[in-house]
Image (cartoon, rainbow, N blue to C red; front, side, top):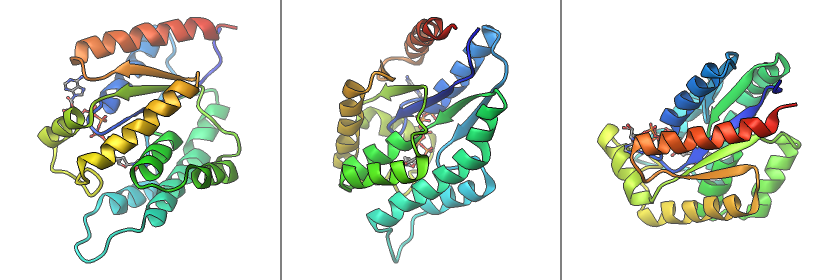
Length: 212
Ligand code: T5A
């Protein structure tokens, strides 16, 4: 028997997170874990989706301060955690989230330069020790990820930032991957079939360790 879990997928734009979330859900289903919900951050509640639209919008006359951007990310996150994720976990559901608080540490901390300790204070204040059981970090070179994102859509406000921003963001992801045993890194520069095969291998191995 395996207790229900909270799984997070992280990575830069175009890393393949959305694909991975669906792939993991299908893999869990095949192993008879059927009660799985998918959410994304920012988003997945009506209010958090409004915040998402605001965050992605290009304003011509004004830009967000980095603090505003961080607080909006957290506002959307708390809305989702309290309204959907924690109640679902209480009901015995598995939750897979496309991004979580590591994104804020990487983007607003690494990319925008907000002090890590301030972001951790925010995390402690509002998430109060609520952490994922597993994070899968899809590691992609910024140039490759942005090219994939560009091939799919026009770029939003954050995606329009300079390559340097994403390099600094990736650095923080890599730093956290090295220091946190609950984060599994997957090379997402490879073709999608190989990435999926590697995700499956890691997930099944991790599931075996969760049997009680
Ligand atoms: N943000 C978010 C913060 O700054 N701080 C925070 O705290 C949070 C929570 C959210 C934005 O907000 C920022 C980060 C983001 O800028 P988003 O749309 O949720 O925006 O996130 P994105 O990363 O922008 O989403 P993308 O859709 O661009 O990336 P995904 O989900 O990683 O990639 P996916 O699966 O949609 O794939 C993108 C394209 O690449 C192809 C796919 O087919 C698709 O066309 N692809 C591959 N092609 C070749 N090889 C592979 N291995 C491929 N994997 C995927």
